[in-house]
Image 1 (cartoon, rainbow, N blue to C red):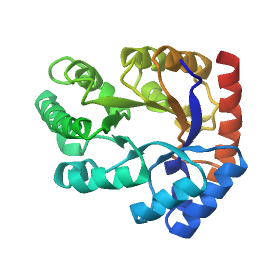
Image 2: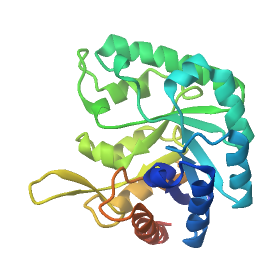
Image 3: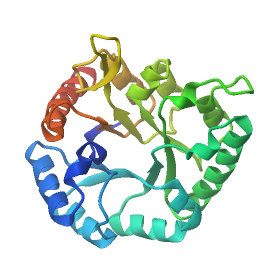
Image 4: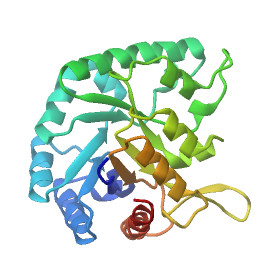
Amino acid sequence: MSRIKLGCQLYTLRDYIQTYEDCEETFKYLKSIDINVVQISGIGPIPAEKVAYLIQKYDMDVCCTHTSFDRMLTDIDSVMKEHKIMGIDTLGIGSMPDRYRENSESVKQFIKDASEVGRIMHENGLHFAYHNHSFEFHTLDNGKRLYDMLIEETNPDYFGFIADTYWFQYGGVNPSEYIRKIKDRMKVCHFKDYKVDNTGKPMFAEIGTGNLNLDDIYRACKDSNVQYIVIEQDTCEIDPRESMAISYKNLCRIADNNE
């Protein structure tokens, strides 16, 4: 396969993309540190046409978005139209709404609802993808992990994944193992490093500064035909823009070592 494309999950820079003017400055900054791949998430109420203009002006390759699942359920035509205006073919959700997390039956309802959304998207040339946190690795009343149900009980044509390395680790599973479980079902992977403070509390870390084996995880992404890896850090101890620059430099080094 061709080299994995590397970039930025804009949620990390969400404070700097709330207006059209700030979004343009952020795109300028990303170009200045050689990033031209982004995932759109956490962006302010900017019309799709204006976002599309900035994408074209700064030659950004937008790999996917995070979009409200409830909007997908209630206004799917508008959601698909907006994404087609922006030239984006993969629509992710950040997590399933709380109402679906209670037990195995509520998860089955989520699978049914998400699969119908995914079917409609598939018929319109788009793709649905699910981003995990850690709760998906709790054991349900049927003895299964929620995430395993999502893998086993969904149609790959209608239901894809956006893996998050930090939340795999936080959830107590091996990130590389689970990335390989969803081989050929994931276009985009979120790279996010993991460390603990002096009290043992888990914390987010810039890529290459935590304790995840990101070299092995990168190789798992290659083996699983992942097309994009984007850096996401939910909270940063330094300016998120500086954090992104550090992470991107280190991610490029990891990629070079494992291609």
